[in-house]
Length: 377
Image 1 (spheres, rainbow, N blue to C red):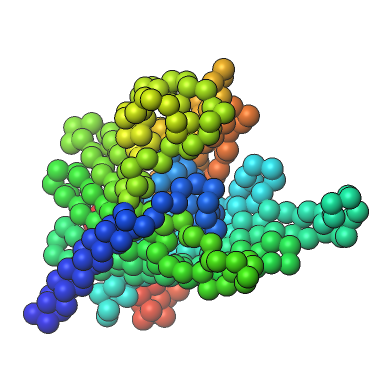
Image 2 (cartoon, rainbow, N blue to C red; image 1 turned 90 degrees about the vertical axis):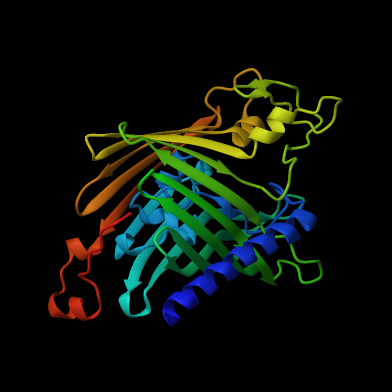
């Protein structure tokens, strides 16, 4: 009885925290792309996430990468799974991600660890006249630790603490942030709903101590997924920037074009309200089709990405992403191909390992819960 009571109190506090965040940030947060520091925290942390449009907080697949999207998705069935990916981003930028989950039965709690690292390479330091003063490097990284617990049969709640660090030339910046999420899973009807408040925190060290602290990339997101009973298809919709209605980029130089969902003029001016464009810029749509129970084909559409990065004369596939996932007993292979711009797509590949099946450590493994395996979603 005490354990159940504590769980109920924890879930109620979590829901209250989300409600408070919605209210506070809905009033004060007016920050969109390009206006905040630690922006790398908004990048997808795995190829599977990229293939789903860059954000996904309500996918119940047994892929550890989703726990960095929504900490409440960490659960017993992801125990001892390790996800790794190392890819080349645009302009030779190196991107590395690590995701890991572990369950502790004595605490009835599931823990997560995430590491994000971006190496922007080496640059030449010059003055206004072009005189060279040697080379320097730039890099960003974040370390995330979190935990998740169940409430009754269908609910989970979780939180994660992040330490983010950025280094540019001789300047560094650091921030302490938190994510908090809840998740509802209806296994009978194959419906999953998730909600998460991301990057709530403060700047611990500023790039320039003489200037005000840079705003952080807060976001409030809601997601839903539905898998059909007699069809191996899952459809998903993710809403982001729920705290702000108009997230269209205000660029007077842009010329009105069109997308699949109506006009997509990036300029904030004009007499037209662009209601449909403003609405669907909050949406990411995705679908997963499973073939032979092992292979999954993925497609997604990010309307905001297409509206901001397409070129009028040649929109191509900007805003779309594709991918595939292969689920084997001991490991998984994930591939994502994201179209940001007509100049080229971003390809990623990543591997997930079920460590308790790959490496058996005997009696010691039983003592530390290494060998445990848990069924369920």
